[in-house]
Length: 121
Length: 112
Image 1: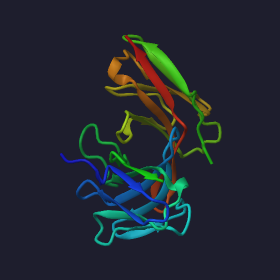
Image 2: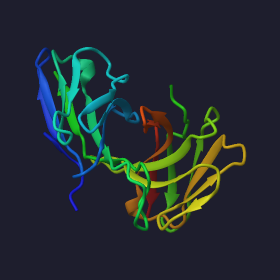
Image 3: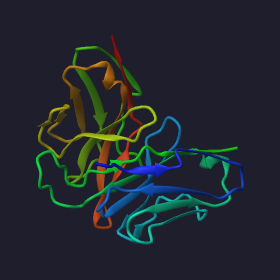
């Protein structure tokens, strides 16, 4: 089946530009997470949605970062007035929150997309 | 805020077991340990997870010490395709679900 997809895969922005990064989670997944991965580092949590509700945004680094998921499926991470320190890979993950029914299913497993690599010049 | 520490890099000969250690000395009693791996230009992929018992699946084994302060991921017969960055993760509660706290990862290189 289709996994988590993200677009664009690569984005180059000039400092000060606004950018929008899209995430298409696995169909039916209730939970959606955004992570930021700096070069050579592990991903760091940014924000979390349960359906359309943004339940936690404690990891967003500044008020220039904004995320939405208006219909509880596709999500967009928007960064306003981009700075060089925003350069990173932005990963989206989704999770079903459903108790496992099939062999091999893992409760609360997060499925990650390939990420969007943002470079701010 | 990092809850896990891992060696930066390791090499392993093809066909041999790869043992990847992780320290998580501040882990709480109900926090699970997860392992994911990330191949270049892809998102992290699930390998295995555990709480306090040792676990095994078709990909790997996870050995957790009795005091839960450390664990080891074992790939029993490493292949060239296992070359990746391996992340040891602590899963912590978050607003009715859980979030992952990643370490800095171990870059495993499997040598022919």
